[in-house]
Length: 220
Image (tube, rainbow, N blue to C red; front, side, top):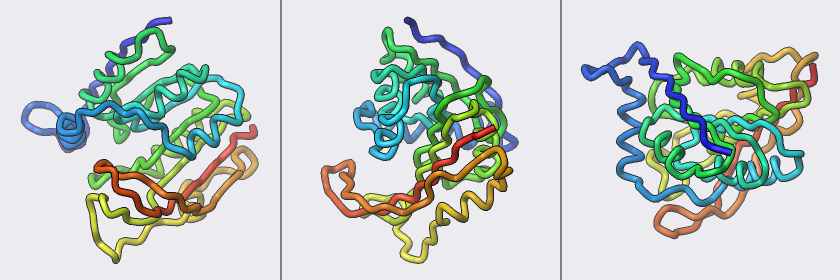
């Protein structure tokens, strides 16, 4: 099976002089200066997907590809999405015969087509303007019946985090769910908790961090 190349170049309202959006510039620069390919999958994705029969998965904000390639190597057909063209091209270059589609989307303006058995939004948090609740509602609507939307957010500040502001408040999983305002007759909250784990930073340092976890199932 080959990678299927598709690019969706839609600029946001905050376009720069070269036609790229502010978000694309920001994340392209991030991935150009963080050249190491993603090797590790996020543990809460592994925990959730490892209990499911592989099907179709959507990795929102795929970044360096750790989650994308873990899913593909475990039998999932994966659509990997990022605003950064640099990140998307790296996914394409590494995919080989894995069943991976890499698409560039600025989620402020476009969303991948299709329906999915699993949609993963791991740390889909940005310092730039983004109506994240709208993006996640769109993701919930793209689930097949029985499909899962897994949202994992930062719930604490690690020593290597960009923003070291002790006054930062992170929305709880229940608050995120309430903001989505999904019809409980069609979407059921299966998990909403704040587990802690020992994480390893880019320099090899370790710290205990909190993850805010929301798991929603589409039932109808």
